[in-house]
Image (cartoon, rainbow, N blue to C red; front, side, top):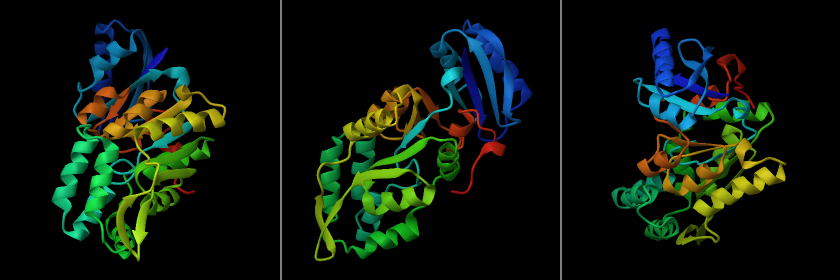
Length: 294
């Protein structure tokens, strides 16, 4: 049995659920009934049939509504591996550092191309960090204080999953000086990210090795799953950029979050409209089940 979860960024009507059931029937699915997770916001439609056909029939069919299709038995994930920039926080940290250095347009263009998969991630990271050479270390703390904003639903997602026994890991192509603090603030089990090198209190223009990129994200998911006696199928991965694709493809539920086109195309599910609480609804957590405190 499969579940298609409809999650509205604003309001979901009973008529939407009826129309979705009709779409599933047209895609050859046998209707197993519907259940509101959160009235007016999120609803499950159970069905038997081809999940790919069901997803194709439902995605983009309702304005402001995200759709997650998955096996009913697997929906409560036992581990989360998440990207940071533009996923768990609202910004790209390196672009904001570049703003303090007066070169944001130059670096942001490289970031955008790298996240779209048009540039090699490691090479693009090295090039951007070299452009920041000489930036005072104090700017890191200032940038964190002034620019870092936690993504809507991030705390609820991580804290609820951890309260239910899941470990959660932040694995970022960004930098430890941001990721470690973000992970602690949200409530992650741990974090892995890149190390900026300094000389005399200023950025040296170098990134420590090895670089945490696409391969490292996937390897972290598989290694942590194995260490906890889990399979990749029991894991949830979420990210927005091309360097997130390998971990998204490896996870049982790989989610593209407000993602670049290449990432969205590779993912088993997309969240294009809602915030990260959509991933709680996708796992069957009603709002009354959410955990807000560590």
